[in-house]
Amino acid sequence: MTEQIIIAGFGGQGVMSMGQLLAYAGMLEGKNVSWLPSYGPEMRGGTANCNVIITDDMVASPIVTQASAVIALNKPSLDKFENAVIPGGMLFVNSSLIDRKSMRGDIEAFYIPANEIADELGSSKVANTVVLGAYLAKAENSVSPKSIIEALKKVLGPDKQDLIPLNKEALKRGAELIQK
Image 1 (cartoon, rainbow, N blue to C red):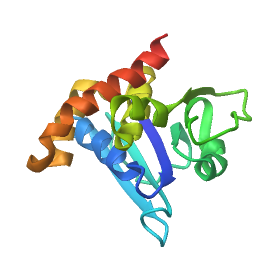
Image 2 (cartoon, rainbow, N blue to C red):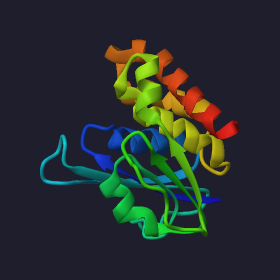
Image 3 (cartoon, rainbow, N blue to C red):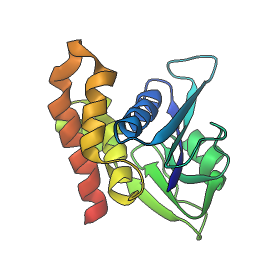
């Protein structure tokens, strides 16, 4: 089992924290992981992406060129990384900010109105978690939502534990979109 994931969006959308959550959750499950962040020069508001590998095997390189899944949180990210998805792979699109569909017929594409759902939940900051929930619902070989919640405790730190119930709900709402 190997999952190779590219997560991309603007700085400030939680791209890096999504990658960290997946990597920590993989470690909690005893898997081998890597997380490779890449920032544009502007940081917040600039481009950001990360490569995450979750596997039962050894990780030879942290660089993902052929992704089993791409999570695109904005249109420039979709434009840049759509072709990195392997045939039969998955593409998760934040349809709140991206107005086009995938141009590929050889992958599964999922359109998640993440910002609208996050706003319904009361915090635009969990839009990334909504998309993560959708990804977890489809990626059977990745990590469990339970492990993500455990990892969230570490990523958020002791000061922000009050945000865990909101993030649990965001994961659940994203998963429900896929399961319908």
